[in-house]
Image: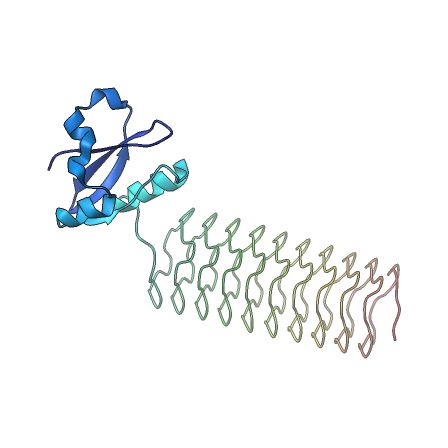
Length: 287
């Protein structure tokens, strides 16, 4: 087929080419003067999609209003250079090396990802519900607003990962490493966090109601405004944690270590503090 040329208002020149049965726009280093009037006329066909339809091809728009990163990604996808992650629900990907992979908004529900290397991967808004992530490596991964409800994250490594607004409802995080992770505003209702490493984790305004946190390490964790109603924190380490404004109503804090913790304006009504270590704790006020 012949070349189709488009000149955009900002002076960019794009050629419309065919490759593998698709039309795509390709930004050139030339300017409009390098093309003939016939090439620039586009044969009187007014739109990208119309030209594709007349040629019986699939139109894929790559236009000048996209940023450079998006253009590059789209071109790679069209040319088959980028694996089209999408419907991967139920897939067996255990032990796979997916470091730095772009999996945002991917459907990985019910997939087997145990032992998978996902360090630095982009999983924001991905569906990982009911997924097996046993012993997976998620260090530094972006899981912002991802759905991990009912997922198995036992012994997973998620230190310094971004889990902002993530859904971990009823997820199994037994012995998981989440130290330094951003888990603020996350939903962890009924989650199993027994023996989890949450040292220095950011759990501001997280919903941890009825979560199982026995023997969890929350040393220096930021729990400002967190919802811990009915949570089981039996013998959990909360030393030097910031629980300002946290709701610990009816929480089980038997034998918990709260030394040096900040409990200013925290709601401890009905909480069981039997044998809890409270030396140096600030703002204690049991209703």
